[in-house]
Length: 586
Image 1 (cartoon, one colour):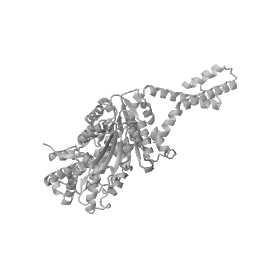
Image 2: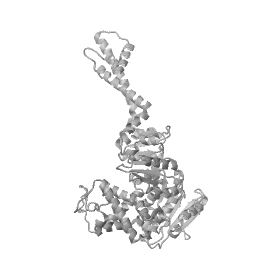
Image 3: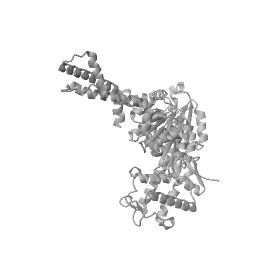
Image 4: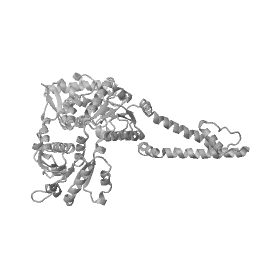
């Protein structure tokens, strides 16, 4: 990271002034050295003669001097060719930069391939480099001004159409660890992922995970259940994501203390959302889901006030897509412009008795200027009530940077900046997709079950927190999550985007539980054997890769069978929390 953030930018800034300075100094030293040699041997030389002989040093001519060589000439006859060679190499690389990028690409593996060099592509490239990955960017527009910036930071940039299989081969997609598709067109992103799946070798030991950004939020939600089973023999995993939806989730998680306070006080919380664009609508849905999961008795409704110039139409659309919203939330819909007189008055902030009963304000306009202007307007109304105002900003620059650096000077400690791109375009958040959520839930269930059975860390080192789990065991849980849809298909079920939030009441029949548990055990045995684990009676040993449970289902103890059955029984709940539900196929 030091080289990318400090060394490379500084070097790019001083490179040619420094090279030019060395060139001038070397010529002066050469001129002085030849002048002294001429004086020593009594030779008369004009200024042009001395300069000509100095320049001949570039091609290693005229530097062969008998007798004592002046120190100036000694330095110059090595420095001049070195400066000239460096300049020539840089010129050659500039002329054949694409060939140089291709040459570099031939020697990398376990890298990240990013398709689409816009704001999101740039952020993911920087993230990958910061985490020590080699990054390869595929960009169709050779005039993109961000190309030089990315190459200067250390990324490899190939110019061409990322849907072209030949370009994907040049990017060594078979050797990559992650593919991130963030082009502006949803169809292009999906096509890149499908072309990549076709290219991935079925026998590849390590899976490539493709992250496909879908701008259309509803389409993204619909595609997620398909992504859970879009792989091929475990060699390819597909995740669909939307930065606005993910941003809403992260924003709510970061500023969720008002939920906890209302829950403890057994009262209705009230939140205000200004701007019902994609981010605002995602925030409504995420807030409703969060409150629904927190309350088992469903006694208190979540109060949500919304302000937008098309608030009624947008809320009607939300209700059509999520009919249960009105059973969880109490809405106060205000249709008004951001700069309307009624917005300036701020009557919506107070109840009929003049009390300000809002817990938190979220401002979700797409334009940073509008966000800041609205925040300052509302701040003047609620400053004395110490109500937090969370502003959705594009990234940590411009107004966002100003807000963070000068909070005390401007007395705006109630204003909180949420930088969308910086928070959502990170590897940590990207890797926390549907497969990862399900994998972590499966591991938590395992740990709980084994601790109840009396396992101790000394005898079972797998009963640790997810972050402390060895990577190969994390991968095992990920493979199990990716196999869920195949197991369900075997008993006549499928997975779809969540329609009703009451799906955790779903239960498998005892016969279905038994069949699903046996399928899962067979899958696990096959996976372990591929990783060179073997059967040995006694205790499991992770280092030696031995396990006493690598036997057919019929030979397992009831205790171990029950572990697989418990995992199966927990599937409906896992899927509900990830936004899916199980349905029976007709």
